[in-house]
Length: 510
Image (cartoon, rainbow, N blue to C red):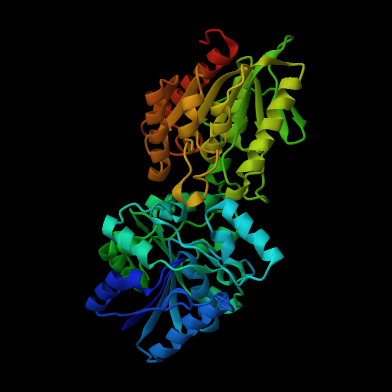
């Protein structure tokens, strides 16, 4: 017998589990939805004294009520915020819990409050500021009907279910978000499963890519006791696809699921594999966080600034400006007469787009001030998650910006990134790009959640008549320059580079 203990997320209570719990029971399992203090029960209850520890105690009470039968497996399921009290309880009953399921939730760390997982950056900052000035006895009002998308994608949720979700939503006690989570070492011994909702912006492929960057915090995800599933839906699968969620939970309890590939210390990770083209060795000069690859020329030359993606862990070594793909592009540009520029910017977390954008702007000014650069002929080339930074340059392109390029870019914030209300939205900004030429390299085997942002951008570009050239790599993956050493990939790099060089230099490039 498996007993599933279901812990709901922010603003929600036991009601969201009704359909899933019924299906689990029909399948022969037990299902216990946890009534979290302040979120379940009569409305208008004071939030005074309700904090994360209160909710951990609520989960512990259900664990203890299930009993201790030797043949009974306990699986804790934490959705959204609910993973915080679930993990807190699992650490104190590790001998009783067989598995913890992260249902489209973050990876909480010891000592970090649940506030860190709130998707809206401005709201995080406001609540953190309020916590410094006054006791955390207040509440965060629940979203209105049309505001749920700010907390996660509502893809697949029927209209009637969304109306009920809104009607039954409860204010979230601030203490539950502001009190740091305290994890015991015992929780590390409990097997885990991540259920990723791709409609909310996360996939197994994306997690595997992040693991490849070498982030120590993600290394534990390659443990064979950690499994993953994907659901093609938004952030509330218990409302959008309860049958599919039930199947996944049963399979997770049985130890099934995808396992990530561990990083092979003897082989370079994808982002450190050699560039797919032979490019010339050219002089490189380092200026702070900016590297210039210089052509053999006497007069000032155009420059192409290559902007890496991310987020990239702050302690990743080597840093992006030494990654072979980026240095390969820069050397290619220098070999054809333009100054190639690679920089390190500080996009280490999704909350870092402001400072990363400032780093890019400062690097561009440094480059334009260099006497070897024609300050009136600059191109910017964005990769992957760095694509969101392109919004600034699309929204107000300066006269000296002769071309903007993007390769396998993210061109609209993913639903769970918390950036939907910010300026970092190229699919919106392209309407203001005017005559600025855009060269977009699109890969056919892109992660679906990123591919959707590219299509959104292209649709917006078509509506406003923007000058966009698409270079397609039908069989290419994200980071194809390192992964796909094919003639198709080489041709795509040649075509994109030729287009950018022609626009930035004002001459034909063979």
